[in-house]
Image (cartoon, rainbow, N blue to C red; front, top):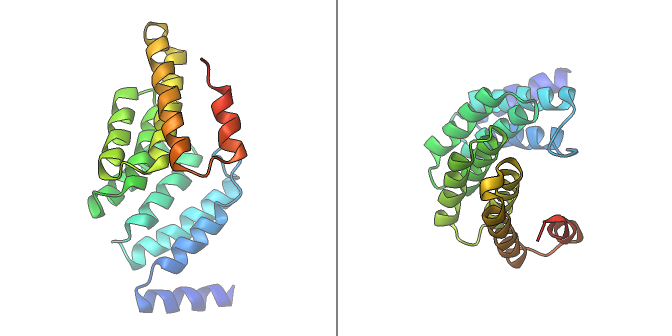
Length: 181
């Protein structure tokens, strides 16, 4: 414990939030289906909050903080963190995609797709935006029969684009195989 206090003191003097960012990321490494054990997520939130106090202009830190909140179903806090990241770095593809995922979980597909489109407009080769857009298309297809065939087709195309931009891992290929159509 004394080591953590000294480390905390040293980092705050240096105005460096990166160690807190890395500590927060480390707590979030062993996600299962995007969920983290509450104790680890809370430890990540604590570390990232300390980093935020040291350097409130670290956009990446806010994205990871949002992810930790989202994993604990604290949507308002996650949204605030993603908005802070986008205020600091409006061209953050990761923040746009993270916010899009948050909107998907709220079944607000229009806002979700808008965020993914913003990420793609910034970087047309940002694969995660296509993956999350494909997943959103599939979720929307499952929740609304009227648009199902169109959204499944869009989802398949978006997932193909994602695969073309990534390493085509076995996990990604298996997920693609699960897509209807």
